[in-house]
Image 1 (tube, one colour):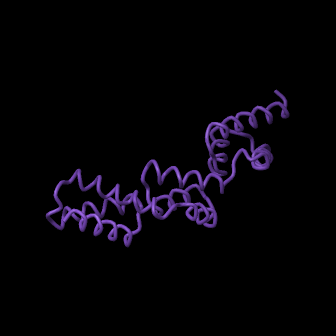
Image 2 (cartoon, rainbow, N blue to C red):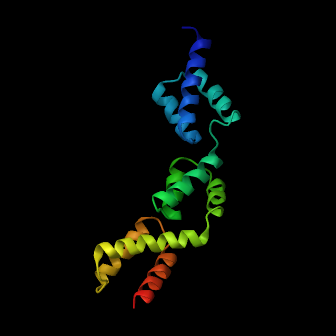
Image 3 (tube, rainbow, N blue to C red):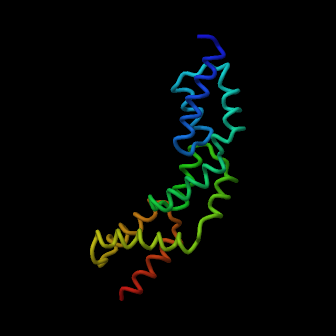
Length: 158
């Protein structure tokens, strides 16, 4: 197999990989590593894929943040850390967060807290309160919002 056909085969494989779902540059680089794409092809393939919009880190950040917030009920802190692990620029993450609806975000935090409260039962001790709060914090929600939502829920229950 000559270099040109090898190059095209690798490029095609990576195009299919990017077509399957939204990708970021670090995921494309990881896939190149797994496919053992020769070093002399990597930069050119990455450039071609980027120019053809097969991957876009800003687009990825927006879709990733929206998906994790809506389906996994993650908070901003957890989403931020996950995107940083994928080497997404902070400015792109900030832009993705700006698209989040604050009211929807707060409502999802309340749903998250209510779900945990229903699992635990009546919140009649500090240890149960701590479990609920810690659960929301582990989901990546900001502590001041967690406390605000928790107090709101308790207030409406009494």
